[in-house]
Image (cartoon, rainbow, N blue to C red; front, side, top):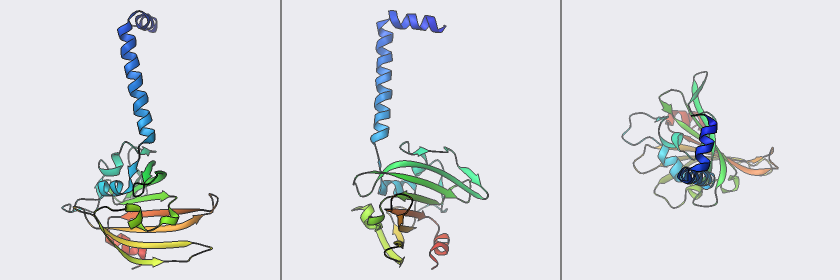
Length: 205
């Protein structure tokens, strides 16, 4: 059937027009919801951390935030750079059920089996405390170390141990700083690490 026949069928058959209208409305509604929906920070973390019964400190690329439809991935499949695999994208993320913000998301790992680290680049610099960002949810958190420089440089690093129900223990680095390339706004760079040895190297513990 050529395009002319399809056009004639569309004009003459009201049932075809009705079906076309329904499909169009469904697509518009889906796109609108995708643009307004956001991910809760706690849910983002918990969905991606390996289960406590897992023998590995990685999450399969086909699980967790890696397949969340609300994330706009730049690369849908993990890319390789030297010996490191990664995916990066962005999503609307809500800290502690507050107003969402656009957040850059990076997943990385040393194996094609899965990712062992999540990185989030946010504008939550003034609310650097992870427990405040996660909110009143089931978890246990311990501040292990902090490096604070204060103003005017404002480069403050906080190192946490984080335990979520039914999940393996993870470690978080929160780097609060002033973004000099974005009108000196407060910013927060969050790294969620699944492997303790990797965390120790980063934290110099």
